[in-house]
Image (cartoon, rainbow, N blue to C red; front, side, top):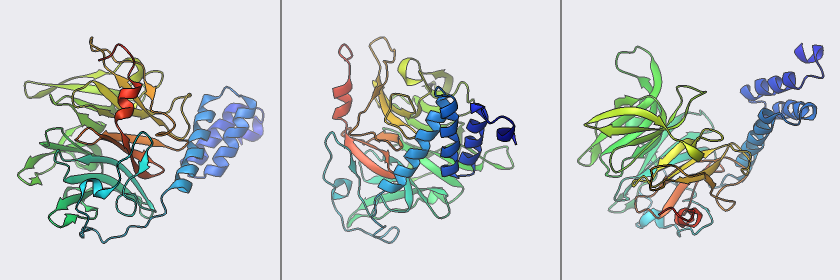
Length: 348
């Protein structure tokens, strides 16, 4: 009715595009956003949404065609680091197709134990659409195929992170928090007990945790859309202190999301949509901390890592050699040498 009443209004077509996006009718959404752009070429919301829709289509088109080759939890017989995959250079490669990266699933957010012998990641099947955390273990007879982690069998769970010292595992999940009656989303944590994880306990509100050697926590604040972005919580005297929003290129010109902080806290990788990017829902960026504790501008990781689809949820292997992240709905990996190559002069 609004479009019929105001056929020359760019804003009503933009709103109609958003409605179709919410109902997953991407083609009608794209038609309305394009019409809005014809009437107002400066409409950045339409530009961003068309980029995300095109990226969504490309991600599905470029997803691996490899089906899951094993039964959940069975031995693969692969007795080598990183499932025997040939390590990548400065150009990203698909990681472990048919085992970790599989057709018909959305895979994201990889984390390893410090010894590299346990791997956790998130998988969501196209049918059902529920996030679960998968685990693989390098045992005497080789790596086990991914299976649902025991702690992920209650509530929808995703985005695991193991601290650099291996003592804790953080993850996002929807379950009942202390003092509440209904399930809600939050960050939970488990302590390492010998060769297994302890009982999950509620830790904090937020999304996508990563941590430093000194226990500081970096995360995405989703409690306030206007002031969200990547924030830091300092750990002091056994407690969590005030939340601090990161400055410079991390949250400007738009808020970053899904941070991975280096254990030494000298650089941070994150993702987000920015106009100079390669399209889709976002690209991976890196920013560096200088000797005064200030964050640098953000540097796009480049065309050999990012692409026109969605690139997000980066982490670094415990040996410091590889970046793992999601591209084309699968897990990719690339050499961390790109971090050194992009580092501006004057930052040690």
